[in-house]
Image (cartoon, rainbow, N blue to C red; front, side, top):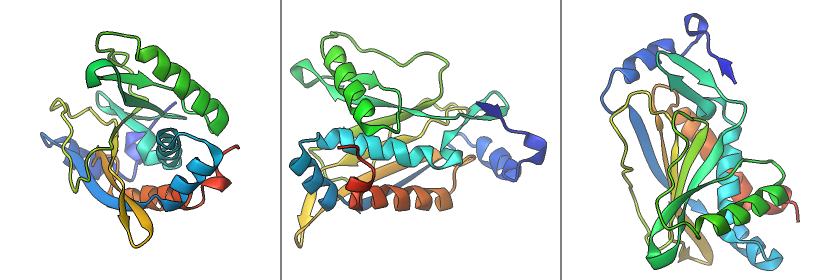
Length: 214
């Protein structure tokens, strides 16, 4: 992790402007083509959720701005950020589960499966570690084809953890499309970076064989 030199940071004026707002978050929703990844997962026997979680985390870790966080009046950049994601357990009640991101997809999938198995045995809500901010908050809503989404957050101007979500697949003309939500702190991340994330994420979805260790 490194601390950003605010005096030599090109985003300082943007950071100051958006950080003064009560709700400085930017939220975009768009559709991605999930067809190739869906086919690949079925052929190789991978869990589709694990693949989307991996691609989401991988894409975020390619963009330095998505690894920056706010601590008091300082901005820090993590070397890696890690997914904290929702898991459905008993009585269709969700819990939070976290996994360390690993560029080796095999190791990543194994840890996701093991941590998911453990969290499903817990009968109370498990919260993330307090004061830790190297997370990506990720959730899936496979029952809903949404066009927008609003995440519950505290009105804390220092809350800079991205929220990433996806919904139900929809078949259109022999392709499968998936709604995806991208929420970030606008003092750190702009629409340009959202575009970089989209391009990286869609590239991985379109060519999963280039990124997955099978």
